[in-house]
Length: 426
Length: 172
Image 1 (cartoon, rainbow over the protein chains, first blue to last red):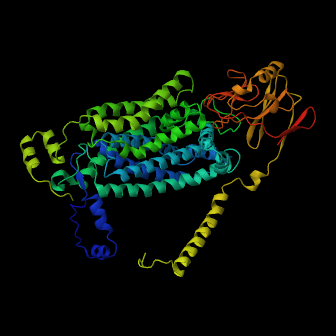
Image 2: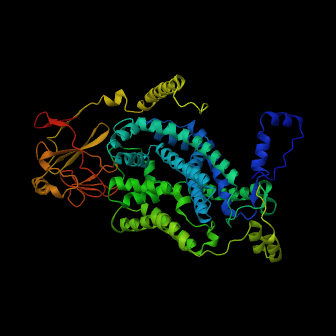
Image 3: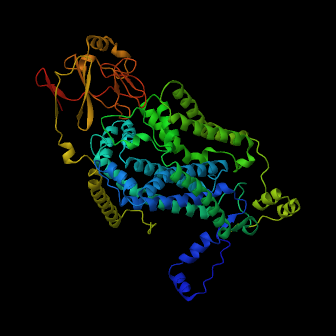
């Protein structure tokens, strides 16, 4: 997809560097001249938004580390010190804690966009699976970060999640003790979670680099789901077009982010986490952070411990198999009328499970979670495989240029370009 | 690979495999200290036992004490609670165990106060059997600390303990 690159060094130093490390031409080809489908909509700006959030989390996190103490008797106090004594500490902490929520909000939109437009389909399976790995790393990072303030919800969230591993037959209890470094969640657990919470974001950076690499091999998908045929007709250069569009997306996203930081910084948090961790008292109602709620609802809806844990992990793992579960040859949901209906049912089931995950595990809530859990898994293992066989799709445009011209009304040139022979892609 | 015509394994092939095997064992041996360092350390394993004066606990009350960083419930059971626990047909239980196998003296039930589902601390005198109810995921335990309904797979654990005198119990 490096078809539009026009990088020709004139400066002597640049020529010298290019002969030794062609990093400038690589950057030019990847982020300036890179051909971007011209029909991308604003849902495609979430990749840029996520990159921004990753950097924001790392920068605020590194600075917060300079003030935080990962020791069970001092951790809670050090977070309060950040809030009261450290210059701008309140803002850094609120930016970091709400940043995690914003990060997950953006990643869920990014994933739903990928599902709606079939971005996981050949040849982008590896790109998609790398995304699932990033998602898993994000969940691990977010979970461990939530433990660090050592409040009641930190402690009991850590207890519940680490106990998930005790469901493994035979070795589960030993694994759990190993994870804790003791017989319950305690100082050794806090220490290692802190170490891993610092490490994992850099692993995310590495997998993001692979994700972007895979993206630049296949090129971006687009709302019409047709491959680029002629980069001169179908594409525009990444800079300025995508750079500017992404910047607009990030600017609007920042408004939302800042609204949370400055107006409702504790809205997404739990009041119980302002109570220091007490290993002798479980809060009446343990709730994870909102971004884990759908999976938590699936876990709780199954009355068997091992089966519940398997179902919860399966709900995430099944995403990696999406490229093979979806049998339809048409990529974009735009041309799949029945798929669209099921897609929105799937979205609703995810939101519904999120709501139920925050409710007490009783009566009708458990039943509703079971029903929505079936809907969630049904989308992957029943609907997607069968739709490919039975769905009557609407006509897909011959090229991106055709799709764009058809929308802007220049119907005459559509016929002309459709008639021309397909050209080799870049 | 380089000599595709050679059918017989040579001495050099053997040396390659042997060297590789030794390197793999060496790598595994080097990784082990890293993994093992995460297990409970010596200070955590050097566990103190806990002693408790039970004479002050009135009938019907549950006292929670800390042992190994975990809560332990000491329950002075009433005659009705003992009778209820003993009357259960154990074949109907998810984790069948007779009440007599879980107590040394019927009036004293001593169990680790950690739900066997995901580690929350159940609430005493609650739930359908007036034993314990776990608020996290809804597991219900009876007055013998046995799991009766909900997602928990096992009964509440009975720790090692002994009565030093009629009034004093040592846990651990």
